[in-house]
Image (cartoon, rainbow, N blue to C red):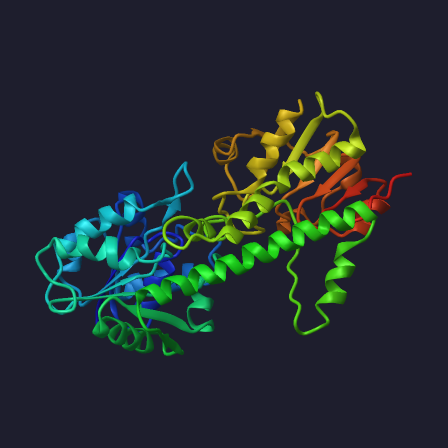
Length: 423
């Protein structure tokens, strides 16, 4: 079959590559001409995505994947269109659909009768039916009569997208009855795994938001309990191990908040519109407040932070993946600076320009001579860090560093929900 994938970014390109590797002809559509050219040369623009480089080179050489900036023309050649355009939030915390709406306009002009359109992007409930489908109908075709629409959320972790495509069941829900059925048939054909065909697009939309809200609220609970543990000098990591030994508990890990494209964003879709979730709003408040809490905890050890030299290490939202969307590292930077500290940033996965774009002054090499160090994302490259020469105080923002090795070097370890050991 011929498939158009609209948006070949962190999710869309691995999806397009995986489908092409199964013998289908895929046209990857994107407005970024440089990325289109790079993909057509068989070069991998996402080097930290496991398995993508080799697979991409193979499918481009075989001719089953081609990238293009001519979206309308590509759609006219395809029977299935997958939307993998990222949706973020605007300054007011509401879904910013502008890029997806622009993509719909380009697709609408090329739709043929019988085409199946699947939105593979997390959305507020009702968006597929009430906002996006009418945009597709502006091309002159009618949904449920001339073409079909379904929603099927991505259930993927950046860095292992190709693995996750077949690891978890696909969830689909149609705007029209045939849309849901056809989407289920499509995914069974291209991935061969299980598919949950739900009653409609709205049910599928809520299912993805429920996944994100669960994680965000669980992390918020862990963060609140970690603060209780701090108040009583209790090690919350021991609490987690004990509580999770009972099958009805599944406490997540505390930290300085939540980053990335997904968890800080999707609960906000439940806060807006009909049926707002006050619990999701509270979870966001708790997690967004954690950078300030962590910096205050450091200040309880270091005293005044005025003119202190601070280095924040690992600026991406999680270890070993070069994605900085909604990274708490920037929040930590602002909190330290608000208390008068001079903050430097370091990340082996980013260029100097990338570090500056997050609001940091790049830290000079070698890393040493700071008053306070913060380990935000514990990349593999940091495993051999000389803690003693780095700084006398370490804030472990994710409780990821081996505490014993830090303290053995004479450095004060500050964790989230971890007792302070100060001589």
